[in-house]
Amino acid sequence: VQLVESGGGLVQAVGSLKLSCVVSGTTFGLRAFGWYRQAPGKQREVVAAISLGGNTNYADSAKGRFTISRDNVKTTVYLQMDSLKPEDTAVYYCNVRSGASISWHEFLTDADSGSWGQGTQVTVSS
Image 1 (cartoon, rainbow, N blue to C red):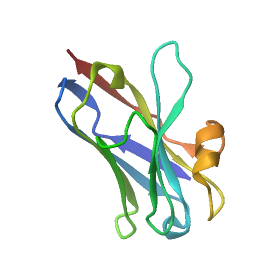
Image 2 (cartoon, rainbow, N blue to C red):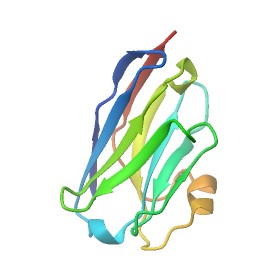
Image 3 (cartoon, one colour):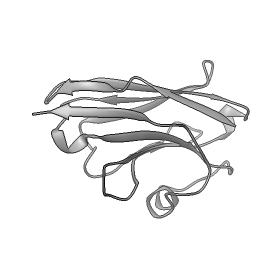
Image 4 (tube, rainbow, N blue to C red):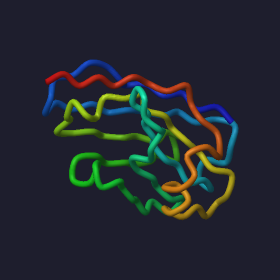
C-alpha cells in the first residue's frame, strides 16, 4: 500500500489548506481512512476519519473547522482545514487500516496500526 500526501505549507492563522492523500495498492472503496497529526514533542493524534460508506468522525479540536472526504474514483482522501490556528501546526499523516470496518474508537486509541504516508508539514503562523 502506498499513500502520498500533499498540500501542506505555511499559512497565516484563520487561513485554509486542503490536504490530499493519493492511495494505491489496496481496494480503496473497501477501506476506512484517517488523518493524523504529530506536533514536535507530542504524540501522534487522530484528527478525522472516514468510513468506507462515507461516515465521518472528528477530534474535538477539528470539529467545525476540518472536513474529511474521499473520492473513490480518484482513490484520494482529502482534509479541508479552515480557520487554522497556530496549534494546528504539525506533520499531517494519512492512514489506512487493513479492515473494512474500523471504528472511530480504534482510530482514537491506536495511532500505530495500518499503513502510513510520509507526512506533509502544516505550519500556521500567528
